[in-house]
Length: 482
Ligand SMILES: Cc1cc2nc3c(=O)[nH]c(=O)nc-3n(C[C@H](O)[C@H](O)[C@H](O)COP(=O)(O)OP(=O)(O)OC[C@H]3O[C@@H](n4cnc5c(N)ncnc54)[C@H](O)[C@@H]3O)c2cc1C
Ligand SMILES: *[C@@H]1O[C@H](CO)[C@@H](O)[C@H](O)[C@H]1NC(C)=O
Ligand SMILES: *[C@@H]1O[C@H](CO)[C@@H](O)[C@H](O)[C@H]1NC(C)=O
Ligand SMILES: *[C@@H]1O[C@H](CO)[C@@H](O)[C@H](O)[C@H]1NC(C)=O
Ligand SMILES: *[C@@H]1O[C@H](CO)[C@@H](O)[C@H](O)[C@H]1NC(C)=O
Ligand SMILES: *[C@@H]1O[C@H](CO)[C@@H](O)[C@H](O)[C@H]1NC(C)=O
Ligand SMILES: *[C@@H]1O[C@H](CO)[C@@H](O)[C@H](O)[C@H]1NC(C)=O
Ligand SMILES: *[C@@H]1O[C@H](CO)[C@@H](O)[C@H](O)[C@H]1NC(C)=O
Image (cartoon, rainbow, N blue to C red; front, side, top):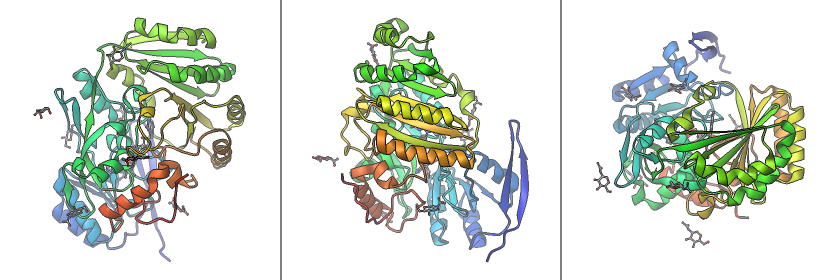
């Protein structure tokens, strides 16, 4: 039996204080590992005994509900550092994991238990825009907001997510659900090429020369194929001034709102994406339209007439400002649990809405529900097997996010979600809203693409160097064909 002695580290930051109970005992072969890393890595290495910098690295994790204690955080400054980190890790039999933005909802950017070797890509922060080829070459340690900023400067857009501080490395390779999906597809649909460091240390500079590897990282690139250092993305010219809208409703208008959305969803102009948010006891719609407010209004006139919002407002600005304007609200780390649902092409039924309302009215913890419109969008014009990202043909993606959930709330959320998914929504769930409680996650995240993903994994990481609880395995007995 190993006995742990804990010491309490209090890291006072400007915003808030965090307490970590760091195990004082060492990881296996830790001294040899450190020797190897110290010798070969040029970037900063943060070990447990350097408490302050190590704790600051733990603080990067957005979801503080799940914290493990890696053996070290490596901050490579170039690809050679990444290669050497992998070499040292393999030589001393450590599991290795990449971290870009630290926004995994299950903390998988630091592994799924103590003593992972974390390759943090924070120094991989360059972005190059090529206007002629309409591409962005972006290093994966960037946050979405720097991608938005760079493309905006040249009058372009790239589909991302709703929160601007998510890492490019995790979000784009696992899908990317946000305001421009109806027009430009999911983020992963726009990956044209990548630089990847494989498990055997080889650097693949152009993943497009390896079609199956490129196929896999467009939807499962954050599930254990290697450490992706750079992505080449297709970007799109857009108008200089675009429009955001906000419609506010009363709580009891939710059923009406959803039924009108179901009726109109597939027919909205692709330049428009709408997102319904429900918090206790408020509901509103945010939208982005690629065009002016004058051009937008005819597209939503009928919708407004039927749903009778309590207030309607439009704001014209450049896309960067609109996507990042309420940034502060996204920045607070804390404890979260999310559940993901895809809603079939008819939309959520009246009964489904009723069931949902009953649940949230009695839910004891703070929550947030976001229902984004996908119906009639570019995302649904792409085939399910064209990339590893399988989820196509849906009206909406819906997230339920519990904030600082108690044990009781977690249990109630689990129970509800299981039933709700079975009865009212599709079988599939979104892999970027990773959820360790989800049963049959392999099929829910990847469906009929799962077996091909396993085959490709076996080819590029045959010894399963990059592994954690919900990474793609090298073998499987599961078949996800319907
Ligand atoms: C507050 C919040 C809001 C969110 N909003 C949205 C949203 O609007 N739309 C949406 O689509 N998603 C959203 N997400 C989910 C988000 O897309 C995923 O959590 C995403 O995987 C996070 O990426 P990251 O790089 O920040 O995370 P990390 O924790 O760094 O990594 C996540 C996973 O990807 C792997 N990974 C990271 N970088 C690399 C790399 N360079 N090479 C290989 N593997 C890598 C990690 O090992 C880990 O398993 C949100 C998450 C949070 C916490
Ligand atoms: C990018 O990373 C380098 C190396 O760590 C750092 O010096 C620089 O300040 C970073 N740039 C930005 C914009 O964060
Ligand atoms: C931009 O793309 C064009 C067309 O593909 C290419 O000819 C050019 O060399 C690229 N520019 C840079 C600076 O890489
Ligand atoms: C839709 O968006 C495109 C940019 O992608 C823009 O060129 C076009 O004018 C927009 N159309 C309308 C009707 O607003
Ligand atoms: C939010 O956090 C990110 C880093 O995760 C930082 O770059 C940014 O400046 C912060 N923004 C605000 C508005 O606090
Ligand atoms: C997708 O499936 C179709 C048949 O259903 C097949 O013709 C096509 O080659 C597949 N595409 C890929 C990329 O596997
Ligand atoms: C590493 O693996 C890749 C993919 O299987 C292969 O192409 C490459 O030759 C391997 N490199 C070495 C040094 O074995
Ligand atoms: C990993 O998954 C297994 C089975 O799915 C589960 O028993 C175990 O608790 C999980 N571990 C973590 C750290 O989530």
